Image (cartoon, rainbow, N blue to C red; front, side, top):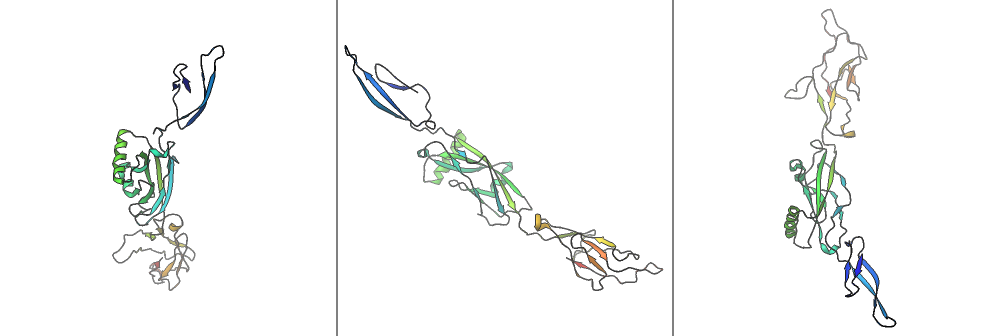
Length: 274
């Protein structure tokens, strides 16, 4: 790694030194005089410390990050924290984090990152039904030590333009579901101004146990929050029907009989379902 000039004693490097590989070299050197008939020698210990140069790119601890946050949380809710390391010595500076705009920058407007700590927080409440996940690209730069955040910001932005050492990582934020949507019936008829109504005709020869209608309700929430069960709450005083709680099938509990004019003898019922 080193050479010494035998005449001048000048020590030079014979290879490129890398402080991150070896920061200190310890060698024994010898000087010999030209005495006659027996030359005399002297020895010493030579220690070479390799000074650090800011030549290492800061690296995120992970190539990708995945965080979770519940929907409807207030602005400023913490999502997660990014961490970075640098093989250079700490005297060269500190890290500056920022989010890069992608896909029009919509996700960047939804989140904010603390430039010093790397903590990501929401900038507004999130709606899982509007968007279940967000993709971000985060960058880390090493900037000069400075207690003034405004100076740090200006320096980091100019460094980005000049191609300063930096690294990026992909951050995915998954929005967890909260039960904030009510089930809605999918009706075969348009809704009226007063309430959601559907008219169902029952055959005058329908027998007990036959399915007279099948109702469907949907819920925009996810997983267990979207599971729907059905029940009749009003209008079944004559106990003409019951509804399957899971399938939504309305089932006749009596035999419907008609006269020669094809009229059902049992009077109609208005059912209110839940």
